[in-house]
Image (cartoon, rainbow, N blue to C red):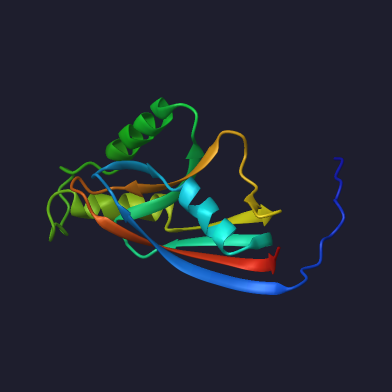
Length: 153
C-alpha cells in the first residue's frame, strides 16, 4: 500500500459561524442546497476548515449525492420506498401512512453532514451535491443548521 500525506495546514484566525437555512420542500424528493451552503461560506468569509450541516427534523435527511443525472435521485427514492413502504403495517402513523416510513428512511440516510472546506470552497467531488431529502408526501418547511469552524479569509 502506498500512502502520501500532504503538508498539514494550521488554522490561523479561528472563526465559528452559524446560521439556519429554512427550506420549503415540495413533498417527497431531493432539494439541492449546495448553492445555499456555498453562499453561507462566502458570507461567513470562510477560508479553511469544516462545514457542518444538521437537519432539525426526524422525517427528512441530508445527503451528499450525484448531481449530474436526476435518474440517480429517482432510483434512490424508489429504493427507499421499497425498504420502507407506506403500507407495511406500521404502528406509528400519527401524521399519516408516510409518517413511520419517513422516520425509517431518515435513520438510514442521516441528518448531519460534515464537509471539508479549503479556500472558502467545499471540497466536494466533481459529481457531488448537497441535498435535503424530504421523505414525507406533502410539503414541509425544514430547518438546516449550518456551521463553519476554521479560519477566516
